[in-house]
Image 1 (cartoon, rainbow, N blue to C red):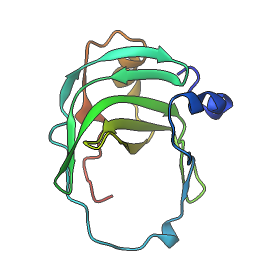
Image 2: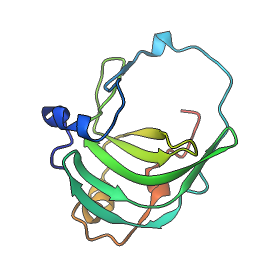
Image 3: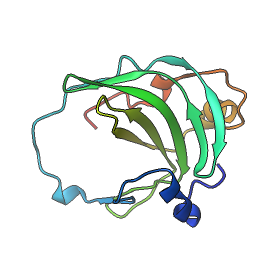
Length: 148
């Protein structure tokens, strides 16, 4: 995964007009309960896949949709951080996947998924990372239990 780390963060400004950037540290003791969001990711299944190398790192273009509280967002691409971009109680982990969606108003929504080390990870990710995978099963990346 070339370039997708904070050493190259200055280049990120060329890809967005956002004024607030990562990383954030999620502190579990400061989280408060609120109304649950209705999330339907049944539109994230098997998709054609196209790897493109970009200044911000390898990007993997694909298709799918996510519905959050009745609003549909369209999947554009994903990328993978080697190690968490964000922290959980100050701790990092193996990798963080970002699924990048386009909102109806033209904005961007990013769904971050923390990835644990897994003995099957090489078999899953090697063809994706080396650009030989023609399609991807997006459900492979999603938590089986959405409540965790």
